[in-house]
Length: 88
Image (cartoon, rainbow, N blue to C red):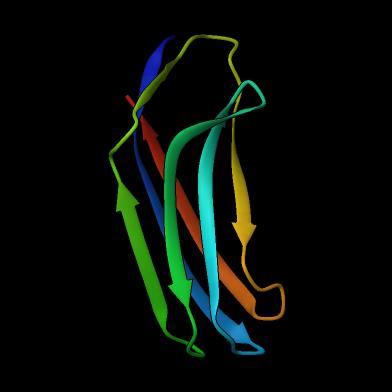
């Protein structure tokens, strides 16, 4: 069935090797990036930073694929991510 991705929620926590890092997560549709993205800037060990967006909603049909694309500015910190999205 068709639905619309209407939110993207991201939380990040550095669990080892602290350092400044910005992680950006975007939803992808059928292998192509969409503009529905959220970013978190983490820098402190064991401190959770979160972000939510409802901008740039997009629809999918039965048979479409959806995935998350993750980029970061610093690969050194070990970051635990929690990601969720809603398609209604």
